[in-house]
Length: 330
Image (cartoon, rainbow, N blue to C red; front, side, top):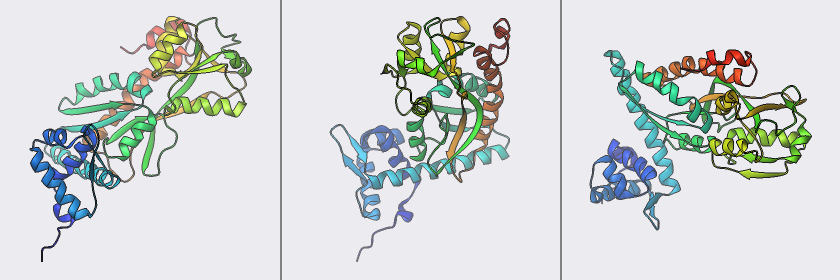
């Protein structure tokens, strides 16, 4: 009588990679091509895995294939296992005096757009043999991808995360109000919260950690803006604010250049504490950093210090306007 193999017996790197790529690519054929095997071979691998698991792992959709709930569980574990193997290879390379590897990095919008490019430039100069693959999205989405094993490391502004995720703060941020100069009545850089009822709020999508922070603040003080216009990116919000279409609340790193040029005016809410948060490095609990990842985090910490001074100066925290040019990263 034939016996069915267990998952442990069938769990090789080809099948691990196949599940991970189906999640990424959205079809079995594209996943097979990504790992360099034919579709018939991929289908055979899937049949063996499904027989061992005792349930379907992949189902057809109108435009391709997607993983079932069971398939997503195995794909997440496969991604973690592959990451561990990659880390082991890096550690062996470190013993041999090499610095190589690939970092699968995710970032929410503010750190991804306004901090990461400079950091990657610094990192590449020091570690040219390390490849960094980057995905940028709202904080909620980036944390979901981290849990799914699609990412190994993430930079987010979220203050809370799933219990399976470790958040390690590396940089302080402040969410500041911005508007077209002269649009909002300010006193010493602050506006009375009740005046916000007169303006349209230019908002990020709900999954944005900065938007969650300002939404919580407005609920706490019982303020409802004249309306809410949800825009898809910080850049779109800044353009709308420059045109006087409303007020916005964004990371000071996102608005530093516009405030420096005088295109936007920054403000805080009178009588309220500054909306301070931290950008954090996120990773799965219990998963150690690889040598390449440790080097990246070290680079991130040192490279961001200069940007922090500049952004703080632009919202009036460190030095007067005439001294700001000296703090511009370059």
